[in-house]
Length: 120
Image (tube, rainbow, N blue to C red; front, side, top):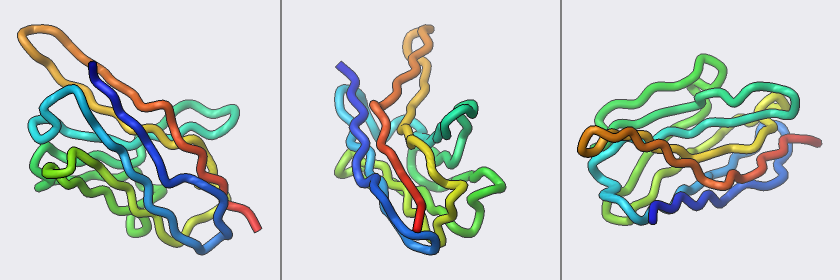
């Protein structure tokens, strides 16, 4: 079965950095795009960053452009989110996601999330 397992969250001071990882299994990782979302308390889940299957194209929410970098290692079946210059407003649970179509069916998978807290 498909599994997405996030890791790397934690408590960091403003201006600090964290690197999140998303280990994928149960599907052909290198064929599909990957995304990172986040959800802060009392807010809707929002798209943070996305990357295409081969990693040739990325896009970011305006709020994280220039500070976050999404990447992937298809040999390791892992996606990453490097977060620099963190701000208190980046505090949220971060989720890894993949969506794809296969044989006419739509699939949408999420990890369990990892908490990121930015505070002094």
